[in-house]
View 1: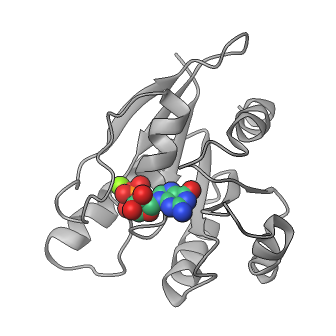
View 2: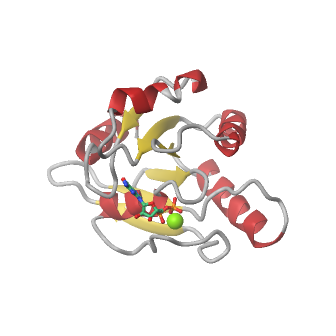
Length: 163
Ligand code: GDP
Ligand code: MG
């Protein structure tokens, strides 16, 4: 069985775009709404000359327990709980939000190994974007632009060091 890497984060941070960049597919719907993509979407990353790993995209954790948003969040949490590594995806343009704080608190409770992926850093100072999340105390952190494939190879190397 391939190691499993789960993408979690609040809606709209670019999880599906990252899924497509890792799997080199367009299988994940970008722009999806929580409640539309409430299931998990599995794929395989087959980086050239490196070990393959499975990736699961989730519909996002929107902070609600009720209705479709709650169902979506529960799916995301179960995906994380079965993963060998969780990529906690955040938006480098918007910085840390209250919802990110909640997801982090939950992530700590699951005790799954996690890396922080600061996405959407195209055109930004990557280090400054990372510093925005310094108070999260996650030392495994990488800045990427999923949409522009920046930092994706480095992210794959970091993932493969951990799974
Ligand atoms: P998800 O809800 O977390 O799955 O986010 P999506 O992958 O659907 O992306 C949400 C929006 O962010 C879309 O409009 C994407 O085009 C945009 N986006 C995703 N990744 C990047 C990125 O690296 N840079 C920029 N500038 N926009 C991005
Ligand atoms: Mg998505």
